[in-house]
Length: 219
Image (cartoon, rainbow, N blue to C red; front, side, top):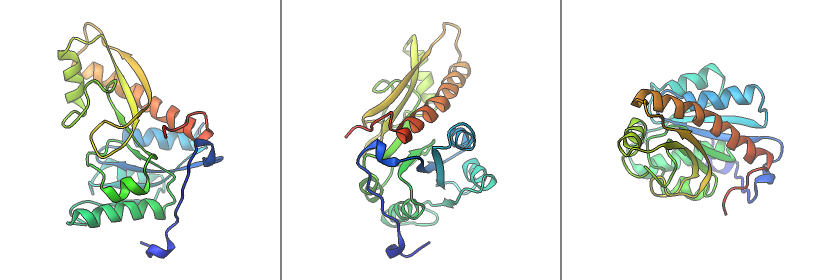
């Protein structure tokens, strides 16, 4: 880790200020399938995207392994490496800054971000949620819990939301949404797979739109 004086600080006020390529710091907790979608896009048809660091709170996560395979800098930062919440928050913020992250994306990251990280990257942290927020969001609503709630409610449409991150769960402004049909014969497995497929595409579409200036972040 570089000394604090060596950190690169980036202050961006408009989407078109990102220029030709946007550096993305990615936080993930588990398998990293959404991370892989971003990596594949960056290495393929979306060179405007540049994953610059991957941070995981799980030392054995698939996300860290994917970062290793693609030569992306990566760190395990958690309560095991930094038992004090304030120290962990500082480590995450400094790691993202050192990597030159201009955007931060939570790709299945299951922890709340601390106040230092939220302040340093305020208005530039994005998350994805597997429903059409504000429906089926909030504390405890993630993964299959969301899809089961959608099915139990008899909804005919579900979908994916990409939103800005604030201090609460799923309450930040929505940047983009995409609908997914809920079919009469859907099971938990079939609905979740269809939503995940659309989610990965929407994430790439949204990040690319921000990088090219086609999407302006709220505020």
